[in-house]
Image (cartoon, rainbow, N blue to C red; front, side, top):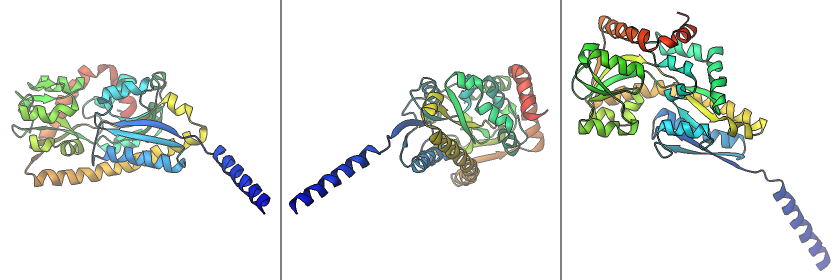
Length: 326
């Protein structure tokens, strides 16, 4: 009996060792998103990481860091190019590596956000995500996220026309917006995103421009209660991955990562629309002054934007025509 018990224990131990030998290695990757809390992109990034871990049965573990934990958005993008960060949700700064993306910084590019998605969810959007220019910089686009439509807000007064911006200090960070403000007699200031709230409160700037979720989630609405719905830009954002990190995964997990990215992106676009509705209600409840432009006022903004496009975005006109068909 003792001999049989010994044999049984030995076989059980061998089975345990064999089972251990079959365990799969876990790959841990880093992901960054400058947004935090209930912002739709922050939620989407967490959901993406959770979905990938579940679908790969724990083989791929993505650790998500929000805000400026891993640096500013520009620094996060740079880290992706050198493999320091594996995944990131990045906005317009990707245009530093794929010049055609700069076309989305032109003013009043599409008639509506829906028109933009028709383009980006087709062959042209796929071409941009997988462009050789991005891949040469170790960047591979996985899916498009919604950045929402951007509007002006400030703590001084209502803005009905470009002329009303005269004398204001406004935070912007793209060449077209800098030129637009200069033409309107305002002073553009490029301040780090995470410093906007304190800069408004301290009087360094009078306001900024961004989408509804950012206006609310960062508490900018508490510092700058006047917001004008001019929708000057609708810049799509990108969920991207370090090409080297992606190619280090086996084909099965690459497929899972891509599918999860596309699913999460679809949900994020809808979540952004839902969040905008809630954000508007929050702003109204807080006493913010929401200025909706008349047809004539909107035309004045678009005319001023066209002048900027022909000047600052002259080198992007071929891409603009390619995207819009105009």
